[in-house]
Length: 385
Image (cartoon, rainbow, N blue to C red; front, side):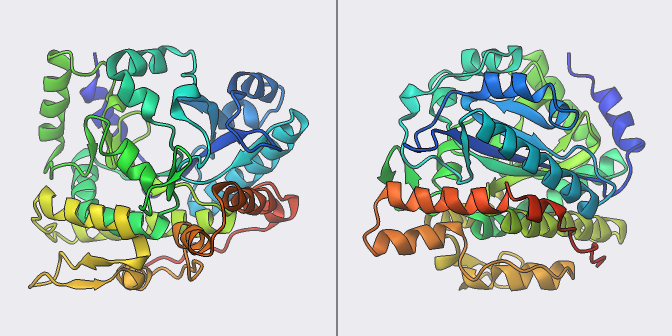
């Protein structure tokens, strides 16, 4: 059974704005760049490292590994932890003859060649979802932000619903799937969010009691056996007392990931401030938010989004997204002029092959995530809105 009473208590005693970062990386052959089923030996080797023993985890397929910062006091602390874990993991992988890639999908490999890892959780996922699980060879970044109060956490999730497509457009980094140009900016989102059940943008929930009734219904009807089978793009995390934002593609460079996660933390903080001020979240139907999700999936920052919070809904250039989020949150973050999908699409337009494009992405990832110099660089202090 899923204990929603204990989960409520976890939120009631949670600490505001603690931060955890989780980054999913592809395990690849350093020469061919094909996916490599190396999770189990890499995980076993990591047990000898006092940081990596708790910082790495499996994520569905044996060619994927997740790095977890654990709970940081704030974003700066979480990123300092994450940078050290990255440095150690990249060095360990190199010693094991494995390279690491960071794009939302793997551009080259066929999903039919991948293996689901042998854990109780993922055996349940595979048994319950079959093709849907097999098809999902995707890589994302998740951010946990502590929010004290169960009802407050639900209202923060509700407030973030229309923000999710903007974060997706910013983070889009997966034009390829199964060796082909998908024509999309985030093929990861289309593969995962449009395939998994209980996924994507949730309905507005309103209160913890309503959330508890929903979870109870799913449990009672044998739809789920653990709350993590609620794969929504934003959700209250029962075990951590956090609001977890799960909408974004993994970022090719560490600098982009650090800036993006800082922005997400600021969005959660701003949403909490509005909830605390008694402001009512915009009453937007899921169908309108999903229209923006599709626009972000298809065209990313090259397209146009709908201003869903304007008195009259109109389009705006998606390239304005970062400025709009900076204005709303008050946080000062910088991202490259072109995001990962845009950079890859420019190379596609110039005639580069998927192998050439992915090789450049992997080189960027190795030079930033795995750099000892980058790991020693301390992140800027949090800008408090």
